[in-house]
Image (tube, rainbow, N blue to C red; front, top):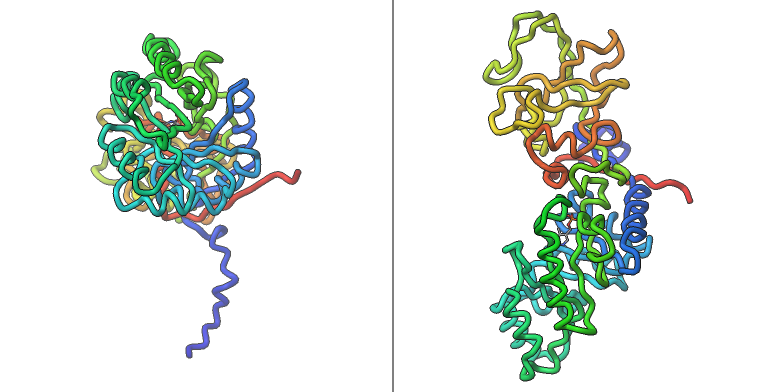
Length: 388
Ligand SMILES: *Cc1c(COP(=O)(O)O)cnc(C)c1O
């Protein structure tokens, strides 16, 4: 055996990571309680699909469970199986529904499939005939045109006296297309449609509101609300101040600081030409880490809201992205920081408490949801919680 003189087990991966993500679980659970408060009499679930919006379904699921959440929504059966270990007594709904070959995993992990098409319904009836009673949820489309039985299908099913007694939905749900835009007439239309479906399934819990819908008020809350993005601190409603606490902080390590003369160009395509002598900080995160190339400093077609591109935060100031973001590195212009304020090895915040994730997303021409879920696998993660 080789005798390694470097004590690998002592390496602090978080302290040395190129990209690190800090998740504030206290802010997360505060946000869930705030959503529960705003949900009034309705119960409040937690949507933890896509690895809890990139924040880690294990730790996030457990923290929300300990805070009192007892209803969860995941996208896939695999996510449900993972979550079950951290939320033993919770109801876990699977948004993608059930497919042949996954029955056993549903049953063994006590997962509730959300049936959203006639095909899934037919399969589900066959499953019940073979295995006996088991709960499910029904997704009804009220105008989104993504998942769900049509209104006609759902109403016919409600009236169908021949349906087997073992068919026992525990939840009727629908999803708003414009929950983030409270000026849209679509919300009211979907509400009216959903009321009709909800009445047809009297005695069964109903659920319409995700984060944006919760802010629409009591009429939209029904029996169960389904917040996702608001739990993670993201903006749920456009055009109003976001009351949620930021949860995630992404920071990239500065690998090198270089001095560059006025007139020189920066990064691929020479897209940025410096107009003054500058100092540039090169950090170890790029688009392969989910720091989207569309946040590059300028000349990015399709990005209109923030034409000058993204910003980082370091030494108490915002610093602009310089030139194009590359696969593994991003360049920030730190000329305006006092000499010596930062050095290689320090970290620049990409988003967090100082650069809101929605502002970083806007500079990339996208939404906070995509920014959070894009921060991929190549990072070290740390969870923090206030002492009670
Ligand atoms: C993702 C999702 C949610 C959560 O939406 P947010 O906007 O993140 O709150 C709720 N319901 C369904 C059906 C979803 O797909």
